[in-house]
Length: 462
Ligand SMILES: Cc1ncc(COP(=O)(O)O)c(C=O)c1O
Image 1 (cartoon, protein in one colour):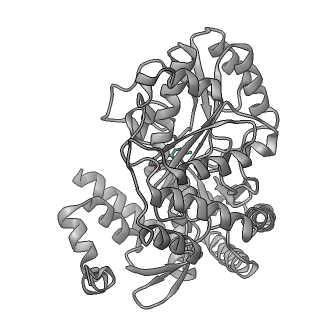
Image 2: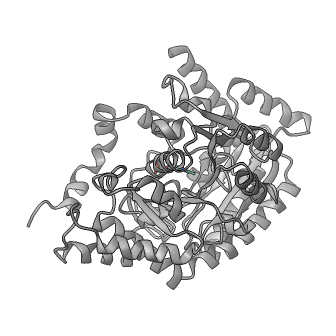
């Protein structure tokens, strides 16, 4: 028998934090310890995680959105085992992959207005490919992106970043990338009118903040791109593959982009993979001669494990009717959160589609709450959301996240397999934590004081 990974994990998992402090990102360990998330998860199944004491947690992050079909789905596992047991001629390079052909065919069946697929290994690599394709296809330099956008952290994607925190220290970035305000068609038209624009790239629903497009925005943007000879790229890396209750989020608004970017869930949660779905003429401009057959690509793209994970994922989405489940459970949760917004003054709004939901908090009206809110927010904008996600985790065993830096939105991005019992769990937990946050003094605000102390100390040390 070769290396026994399960035994190795069992033997050494107690050292995980020490190993990371010593050899990896120490700051991440500090974050986990400060917010009390250092519970040492030991296993995962479907929408749940289990800690060292076998306590079950409901995971509303799904690994930043990769576990659409749930963790460790048996069918994904079988597909991967099947690849390993089949002695396939993986990554020959001077051959073409049968599994890649089949996965491309099945993806395009779901997005019939596009004709070609380019596979990558991650989300950001899909964005990089799309940028190169857009420039090659149009012969123009400029890429337009939106404020609050997040398209990844490699240099091309970082050049399309709507959040300065991620850019700081890494400049200079790619030239000719211009930001336009999200949901502003006039600004987009002005930028497009320069006729130097290769493409406009947009997340149909923005991940940072869960910002919704106004009705008509995406269709209007596509129309403007057409008129001014620019390509429309939909970054569906987070929203795609059923997350919003449609295969692609753009389907909610009847929009047919020139390129669609996928990744995350296509992996089945196991094997990194990404895909650019595109029009044939764009693809043909890039790969235009035999001596340019490998002008863009990557060694591991189209590897058999990734392709099998993608095929299994598409199968499960359909056989378990997960897109329908995302639409139904998402609508139920959104209605429940909107009810909370009506009842609780700290909740400003709830928005989203399917199982991509944001709950936005904001300054209260009543004086007693206002003083506590201001004390926290003047020191660190966005800190309030920690007062929600920490008790959700500690008291209710729910793993959730804040939707970005300095943002007052808590985000739900669960696996698409969640049940009505899970929705009951979520609604009960949020209601209890939000109700607690309206009590001053109370447990939530004393946690606020502790966090403020940590923030001040960290600043003094830094
Ligand atoms: C909309 C969007 N685009 C691109 C990316 C980058 O993907 P990756 O982290 O796989 O590079 C992300 C990741 O969160 C994303 O949400």
